[in-house]
Image (cartoon, rainbow, N blue to C red; front, side, top):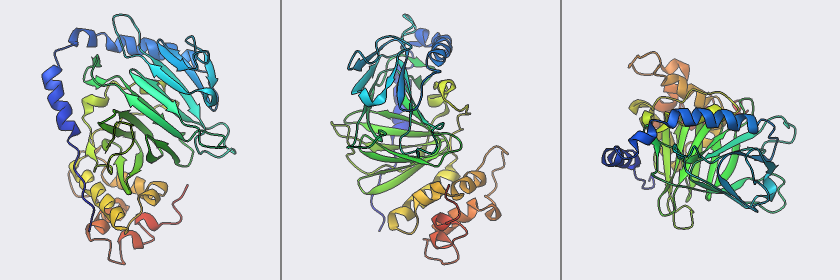
Length: 351
């Protein structure tokens, strides 16, 4: 029996909040694009020399603990010495918008010294690296982000964006007690006694908490309920498509790799993705193998809407076959996860 989950109501709630509060701060929001461009250009120049396992003070204002670590914009320091970081919300009137950029090893091998995982923090954010024992690279973090405040259009300007290098294997880390595995560009927001939202701007992420997994593919988001201590209060929800306006103004220009933020995931693709997640719950499929191998790209190719064709996915390209296998319950030896030519069992698909 598939464990109970709830479909996330977050997009609907956000829409209601936008309708109720859309008029507030509208004049300030109109100056956001100019401020964003200026801050990103300045922070990019200041943080250009940031190396592996270092963090850079990109733009006013932020408070580091210990304070001596990052005192002025342009300061660069080892992440190992950082206890916490508190950034300030965007303010178009004063030109302030706290920005910090870190390049971290996470769990990338030492044999790839030139490749790093980019952590971009911006706006009303509290960020804490959690050192685990004798590990040389930090692989666990705590995040809290504010809600409300000045929006740029309908995009909230508080959050964390994590990006993996294009040529690397997938990376794993823990955020607010939630296990994250990703190979992509993912945005995170989190509120105590609320939810952590995981948005896949490109690529995909597998999210695990409370014994269950979920996945966000490009154009969708997953939420995880959090308690007062910013720890998981329940399993991750099923994915839903994000609203285009909620991601349109995100500061992706400061990332290592240039990306185009994905369009919202189609209903058809969401249904297929949820089927994969349910099969993972039942033990008939492995989302981590799906992310590691070629199967994820097959899935994306099968539901690529660029052509504007609303026809059913072609099973011959592999992605439609994946969705069909899971719909059949995973019990057919000719499909599902038991077929080494698709699903999660492709041993040749690892990076």
